[in-house]
Image (cartoon, rainbow, N blue to C red; front, side):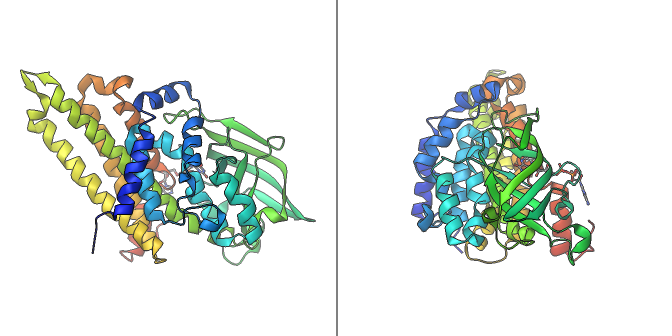
Length: 388
Ligand SMILES: Cc1cc2nc3c(=O)[nH]c(=O)nc-3n(C[C@H](O)[C@H](O)[C@H](O)COP(=O)(O)OP(=O)(O)OC[C@H]3O[C@@H](n4cnc5c(N)ncnc54)[C@H](O)[C@@H]3O)c2cc1C
């Protein structure tokens, strides 16, 4: 059991931290204030080839694994870019996995390279307002017509839709009462985000202001058959292949945020003098930070275990969920502790930890809530009755 990074993995981490240092905390604070998508950051990462880190080489990727992608996304968040930086680029890494795995050769060559080059920007449209976490009840309907599908429905919380031109969409092709299993009858599409048929309405939210979240109102959207990924009705099964990587990456990002929060707080605790000594001399300041460090690094081991299992083609559902849970909870604790360490300045934007705290709340809730992860672990690991 070797838990250290290989030299290639260490090089990835260092290269990303170096690239991201061109975008300091002040840049991300400005984006948070003006709410403008960090296009120049997205462009830099695409041009340097990082969006394809976990995509096959024959479609322009680097052919590396989710482990390397997790190391990369952890460094992106740890640079101080937090969820704003991460969410501006992580979609191509996990959302395109279903195309790489289930697309035809023609689809892979048509769909993946423009996303990796940064020419196409994608959003991932699954969640619906009246369905919540019960994904099998999705109501957005894709009705079969000659040569394609006519789609109507609503989606909610869809990130990046203000600037995306492409959309990965999960919709129902066979009504729920006509399928044998409730996971059947959903289909996955990768298609144009046609604004003449989709109204994209911004949701005003707590943080990550530069990466938008939206409601989508879809009316009579035409999707040609060649934009369906995999067989009709298999969308739920196909999308599962992107969900574990998504949990792993979100977990890695939460670790990155936890780390930068602890670093900032420790620095402040060295420098801030009260009662004629650094506040960091007080164990009441030291111990919570040390505890956060231990929790964040322990969570990291679970996230990396999940990534390693995934890359070996082994089942990683339990570890990916547990890793995302532990990372988000410990990352939250780290950000909150950092804020308390900075006293009043913890509440000031120019010290950044209030932004970290607002942004760590995203991986705490999305893509799956802590409650649902604990439900899942109780059932799958402990053998307790399914409670949902
Ligand atoms: C900033 C942000 C960005 C997002 N980006 C995207 C995106 O790009 N694409 C996308 O498709 N979605 C996106 N989401 C949606 C996100 O994945 C969902 O918000 C999340 O999955 C929770 O779903 P919900 O809000 O409908 O919660 P609900 O299903 O309404 O649940 C509400 C609460 O009840 C709890 N609950 C429900 N049932 C149970 C149960 N049986 N046992 C215990 N607790 C239960 C849940 O855990 C949750 O806390 C985003 C969300 C946010 C906040």
